[in-house]
Image (cartoon, rainbow, N blue to C red; front, side, top):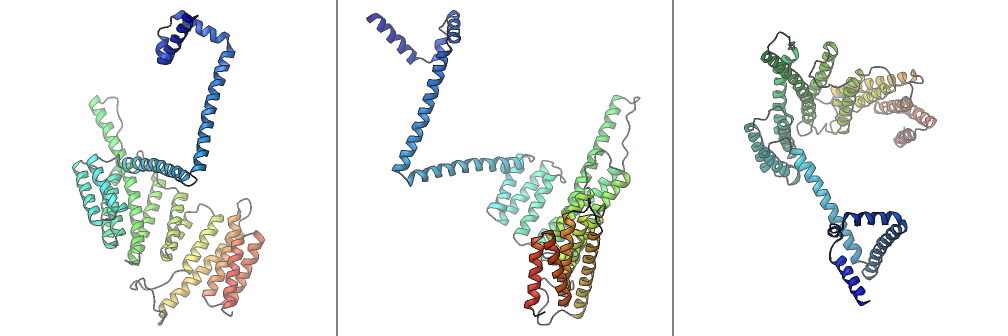
Amino acid sequence: MNARRAAHSLSFLSFQAFPLAPLRSYLSQAQQQRCIIHRASNPRSNLRVNISRQNQIQCRHKSFMQSSRELLREHPVVFPTVMIGIFIAMSSFFYTNYIYQTYFLGAYHNYPEPVAIKLRRAIYYTNYSLDAKAALKYYKQALQLAEEHRMDPFSDEVLGIKISVAHLMEKVGKHAQAIEILEVVKRDCLKWVEENGEEALRAEEKLVDNGMGEEEKVEVLKQNELVRLSRGKRTRLLKKVVQFSAKLGEMYADPHVWNRDAAEERLVWAVEAGLKEKERREREGVKEGEENWLSDNELGASLESLAHDFEAKDMHFLATPLFLQALSLQGKTDCHTVVLMNNIAMSLSQQNPRSNHSGPGGISPSTGPPPDLRSAKETLLSNAMAWADRAISVAANITPPERTDECDTGCVVATHNLGEILEMKGQPQAARRRYEEAKILSKAIGFDDGAKQAAVGLKRLKNAGA
């Protein structure tokens, strides 16, 4: 009996002292097979093992929960604070890693490492610790290194560095320098498009003939590929030039610069260039290698979006031509046509006519607007009324299934706009009738905002004693 107990103890100690995996190497193949057969013939033993493991997990889980409750009871303030601190620390770690991978590594992977190092420092002094002098120094070094590494000066990466310099100048209030940089970039890109891009557009690709030698075939294919790449580059740079011109229009219209003629010129050029390229593709067809251009809906939506941006900045004189161009791109007369006509009416009525020599400060209230400006304002209001009336007429002639809620709300908005325009023209009684009409129409279609705005207009007339 003692010998058996000793043997049992030794076997128990041996299993405790060594892991299971090395012991399996000591078992013979027959023993392993017997173990497998034994397990298969005794499913209850497997069940007991699984249940026991599950109980152990539940016990450990229960023990953790009990410990947490005890710590919370003993330290009602410290324990939650520590847990919150751990959560914040882990969140900060993962967020920092995400930012590093996305913005510090991912954003610069197209640059050679020496250029990326300088560019990271420049971006740091631009966006995180503003220091224009240091940022400008690193931007210049990045451009020099890009040239040394023979990066394409018209690549998105190099152009991005130059645009960042313009953004820095605008950010620190040096608007003239920002405009000058962007004008130079635009001019260089446009020059490449006109000299090289147009040549690639006119070039005819050569056909590979079976009678050609292998070297000649390779040369022809190489030349054709270069032509296609140049066409794609032309499209990309032309898009950039259009974007630069639109941005310059916005910058010239900034109160710190206020050059209305230059703003209109840049903006009109951007619109005309976009439409011209679209018409060329429709006339000649898209050639192999050219990248996609904007469709009518995309171009119209872009123009409309830009117009709304100008309206938000109280630059209605820039918004009006964009709404007009967006309207011209409408393939058919639908309910969105009504919306665009309303936008044109409001942008006309909100314009503040003044001479190109006047600054952003406006006209002195003591002297009032000169006669020529009063006449210009009357003309703008008359044109605005005409567009609002036209919007109502178009909405009335659209029938289901083309007619949508946009037509109903557009009709209400146009009626309300007429009330505001009449109020500006000094005709309170006519304005009241339009506000009342807009209020009734709004209630009929369940347009609560329209009813509220009409009520505000009526209250304003009442307070004015009209």
